[in-house]
Image (cartoon, rainbow, N blue to C red):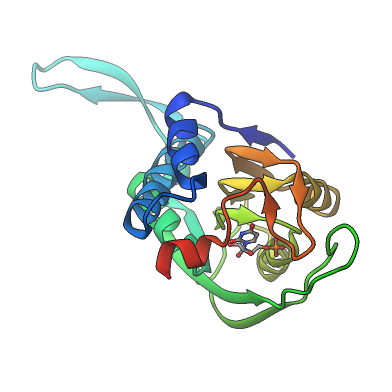
Length: 216
Ligand code: U5P
């Protein structure tokens, strides 16, 4: 398991705007697209490549590389918050195949602390066939208890892809620990690990309900 906490100022700048309660719906969505694109390029930087020669218009040869893993990318979008985020990822990974999982949490309030597991209803799933060559990127901007992500990982893990990546914007400390323990072979890309979860299962400080803020 590798945890990539991406901390370049450009990412933190867009995340800060996302967290603000004053950002409007359109800007919220646009920022998620931008973050998806940059995280997508960070993901590309971890893929396997080979050295190749390329001929320039001047009849000379230059040494270069070809990232062959780009031929086998599968992105899984967890609706609905991931929609603009995945739009950004696709800009960096235009050859990706795309699957969707429609899931909703049955949010429950607890008296003390936070719910450690929230029942998740998966009511639609359409995922292209997964091959052993695939890098599967499961995208959800917010991971709180990790219950939704667990279901998504379980839906593809038996197909044994080459790697499984999680692409997120904010993950809670608890969700991170839970996913790392259960799926030590998964790598996680995020911008922030937030310390807390409230008694309804929302990340603190977080940014609220990403689906509602992006789409009303
Ligand atoms: N979610 C939010 N904001 C939060 C916490 C969760 O939007 O502060 C949404 C995510 O978009 C995701 C799901 O689809 O709830 C993840 O929650 P969990 O299953 O990790 O608890």
